[in-house]
Length: 64
Image (cartoon, rainbow, N blue to C red; front, side, top):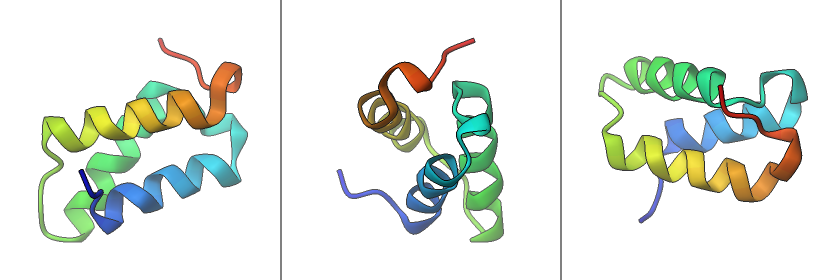
């Protein structure tokens, strides 16, 4: 799956600020950025972002 730009931006935001690296903040950012693009984040996009962040950030990414 190719991620939409708003999802890529959310992941980049977590990359830039380690204090945001948890599933709650990721979901919030994905949903908020999707709204700015006039769309809604579907479950597939949200889950893909979650998988990417778990792999990319490892132990620095937490689930609540």
